[in-house]
Image (cartoon, rainbow, N blue to C red):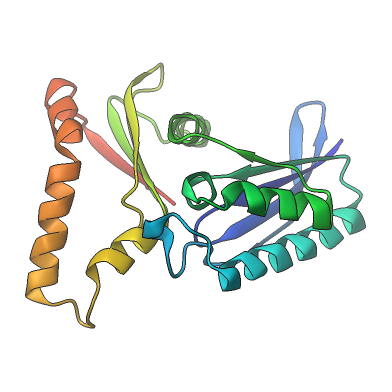
Length: 207
């Protein structure tokens, strides 16, 4: 069976097409497009018209590639930017109308669980680890070992959100840096507490 998988991130849309045969996975094609869906007004929970159009164009291109490779099944998953946007459902419907691709919007918890399974499959998990998945809209923290998740949480502190909120100059001013660090310290108090309860011995970053 040929399967096409689309990951609709806040900054980048990814497409992977694979042949699955008796449990073996053979990658036929993969690409990504920097859509920057969160550009402009992500902190106002809105996909601006320019980003909306870029997203539709990217998925139209993906749809053509999927047809070329004759994928039998398509799985498209959307994360932070689309799930938090007031016009996220409108974007999903526009994609469906234009390309026929059905997008599933997953919660932050579901995203964290998928990240855990992916890191586990990579063989990187040893002892108690803290996984940090750095996205444009959200960052997921998963405290875990190979056998279980002890704690997980998705925070709306992705790169696009922080850029729009705090990066008012280049280089970043000392005042904005201080405000950013204070903001993160306040947001991540629960993470600090759980890490004291289950001290991780390794940190795994993913993106």
